[in-house]
Amino acid sequence: MPKLLVLYMSREDEDQFLEYARSLGNLLILPATSPSSVFAPVGSFPEPSQDESTRRFWLQYTGAGMPLVTEQVPEKEYYAVDGFQSPVIEFWRSWTVSQIMLPGGIQADMTYIDSDKHDLAKKPAEFRRWFESIDGWLRKNYRRLGIYIFAGPGAQRFREEGGILQGR
Image 1 (cartoon, helix red, strand yellow):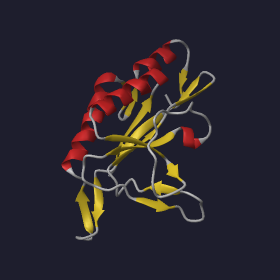
Image 2 (cartoon, rainbow, N blue to C red):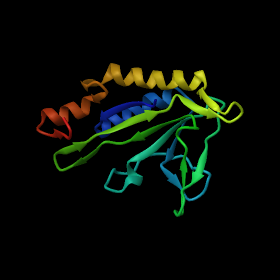
Image 3 (tube, rainbow, N blue to C red):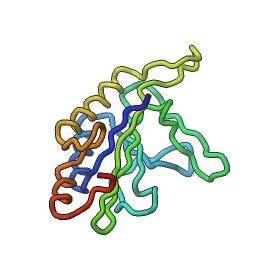
């Protein structure tokens, strides 16, 4: 069962979140898709827009001793990360349109299919600890709006100033 948090983040919230994730070390930020099986890390995010490529990314933990597994998407000209088989957190960014903030979030699988055993296995403890650290930071620094729904300080200000958090 994947672990999931729905997040409302202003650009400032996003910057602080990524600063924390980078402070843990062993982080690569990867685009959602790539023209080849080699994913070039992203240095900074573009302005979020309707185009999904500006909003969906992978946070790869490189200290787990697990490879990044990619696959060519059938009938498409690009590759995607296999989030189930890789030490990654899927990260999708909040997006503001007019006075409405659409939610983003993070999601990660804690298990993978061990091809030697032909069975589910837990991802390495280093990866799980890394994810739990990020999850704990978000829960401590963001306001809980629902069971798995949190808003960063900037998103809360946006709401207090008349903005709408979609789905809330």
